Length: 441
Ligand code: XLS
Ligand code: CA
Ligand code: CA
Image (cartoon, rainbow, N blue to C red):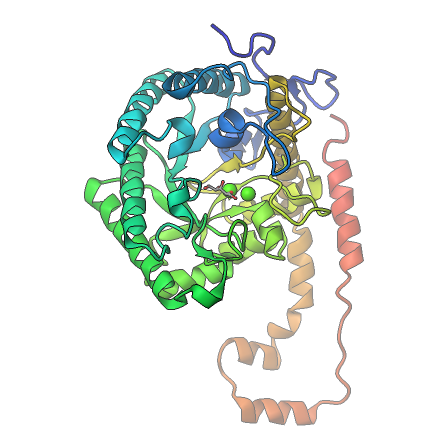
């Protein structure tokens, strides 16, 4: 039985193809800089947006029409697994990701929830035997159920802390069982709504304790996944503790956890924090903390987390630039934490949206690699900072000077000359690379 009978295997047909159900730019077997596109991009499907999402919003019920929509409970969960592996195969993606509640319904108590999870995990494991698609990461949904009204590890209620720990413990066991490459902690409601009733210090200390216990348990059971923190500044909380990479990094250092974690960086969360996507990637990269990416984009006209499929080539190019400069994503991947728009409610849209996202990142990869090959930005930056490669600048970076010597230097100066940053010229050059990347294809 097929859930998507009208969609065949999605193949690469090249930039001139008019077939909507084909890749125009993502050719998984093509090699760029010694690695196939599949190896570099490591695409992943987000279970929640693809198989669980109903496209409801605060003003209306779901619009999604899904071939599994008539099932309920565990039958629904099983149908979703069947549909998921058909979808993975037709799109030929190497990875997927999920929250515990995406794959199996919660039971009347925690034990029943575990039983439901065990059934679905066994089913997934069975499917994974014949599938190339592996688990990029799993995570615990410790934010939807009303018990998490005041957070999970940062809740004022110690019972909620314990319940959250139990769910993460189970998640680590599941990750191990399915061979997950990473395990993600997104803050969810780990933050506060009002500082007036919040013990900020206790909440942050508890969050630190929680992460430490998770690290210890993973070690104890021999689950060697890369742990990832996914920053987000707000929504649903007013203030979330893992605000952005810089805040998260300071938090990890404060609790001595910086060697156990990296970051899962989401584009839309970066923009919600008032940063660009590439800023967050750069910040993580230069601290050797870039772990994985949630590939999506926000809407500049809306101030919330719209989780759109990434189609902005400028953004995918600058993101891939950071990823390539990082030497790739290691065990991480590009996970489409993205949902089709409410108006794109047919099942086919799930394929079309992923094709759009995968093609956009394939273009970004090619353009970014061309720019790196030609040293475009490297040259600009090198020239701009050349004052630090000799004389007083070199003494500064080598730690060979002090305020007295710097004052001496300053007093000897005539009028200081600065150089133009030439940012418009750089942007025009990037446009050339974007337009020339497929010339002749
Ligand atoms: C929500 C987050 C979430 C995480 C996983 O905004 O993006 O989906 O990626 O819990
Ligand atoms: Ca995300
Ligand atoms: Ca998001």
